[in-house]
Image (tube, rainbow, N blue to C red):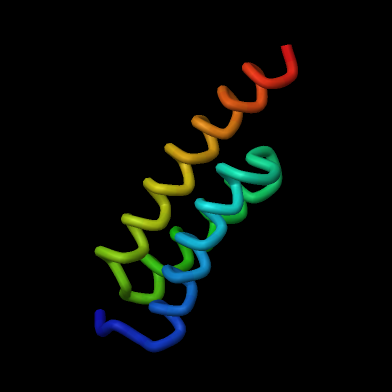
Length: 72
């Protein structure tokens, strides 16, 4: 399966959403980043898609911990 330009765009969106999940709302942007990473992998962008998917998952969990520490 070949890599496509749209696959790269989904992978880039996944990585951006991972960073947003860390800073803003991990409950919203974390799953969106994971979904975008999965779409990128399905479109043939295996490495960057998995990188975005993994980054989204890790940074969403980190965002939950940071929010928990700041709130209470």
